[in-house]
Image 1 (tube, rainbow, N blue to C red):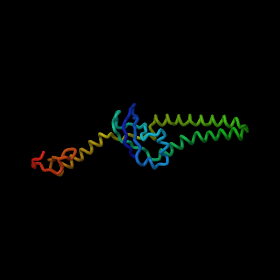
Image 2: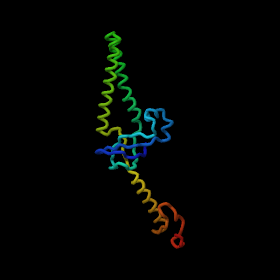
Image 3: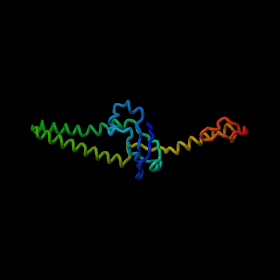
Image 4: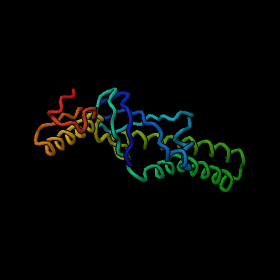
Length: 176
């Protein structure tokens, strides 16, 4: 899936990109997970393969299916370890107090594991979105396509401006 955004900052081969929510986001069942702060803009850490700088408009490529795995990881590991603490305290030690204490320890341990995995993923770049091109690159590519198609149609002569204001006029019609 491709998304457009604006680079906020860069560091080494990473870019922090601000991405506006698309129309599809409103119908997504996980919309509240991505939009927990109530704004329609979110910040994403991405691999900066094109060397974009702060302020550049870019296109990101996001791996499909990483959202479900990430949610399972972030919420699943702490909850499973919390329930393990409850079970160990209740069934093995047979004390409610130990169930509560071990549930808290399991939850904290789960969040610690998730944080360690997050740091590892950010260092390696696995599962991070990738900046595939700058907006300048699309504009340049579109302008080259327009200029090449103009040359082909008019044998190298074109009065058409970039905004199309002289579109359809011949080279000798005297209108400028």
